[in-house]
Length: 224
Image 1: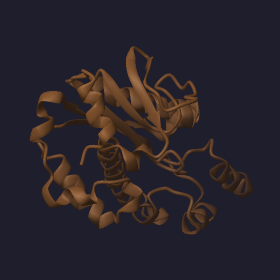
Image 2 (image 1 turned 180 degrees about the vertical axis):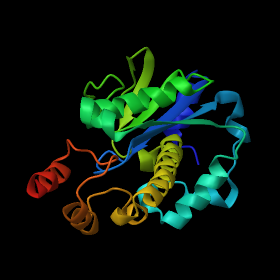
Image 3 (image 1 turned 90 degrees about the vertical axis):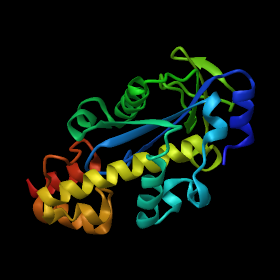
Image 4 (image 1 turned 45 degrees about the horizontal axis):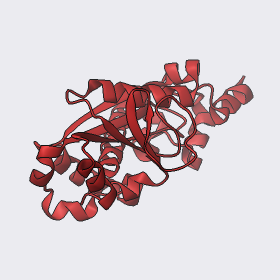
């Protein structure tokens, strides 16, 4: 389960380690959702997901059905803490998607009852948005952080966060589908599929569309 790098971090004296990831950054509608998963060092040996462990990886590698099954197992584990943060389309349009993503990252971390002293991130940026030039731990935003490209496949805590963020967002998009059935959000989850673009051209945008995103804005311009 836990990678050698995660075990090393705990061995180096960090007593609460977290992983963070987000879902929905590239979508045309709906929120960007971040999830943080934290584990205490003294709970490390107690954590087990049984047979489900082999399916805990980057959420994009799993079918929707499998993600839902794995999610339900993850959230019932008493030895991890997890939180999610939703930044909706109106805010995304106001501040831009990158600032919204940073806000989602920080938001879910602040919600954790057990604050981490080490954080793994998926990508090559720190919490303050600054670029990481090498995958080495660094103190940033008052917290030792290690951004890693592909961390959702390499770091177990980030894999957990990846699945939680994705399923949390997908479930919300299925609720939005009931409010706006003409867009078929349950099928594409707000991403820019051919079907979604066609629906935008036919119906225009709704309240959860990101008006600042070019494909949405282009459809609005053509309709206008």
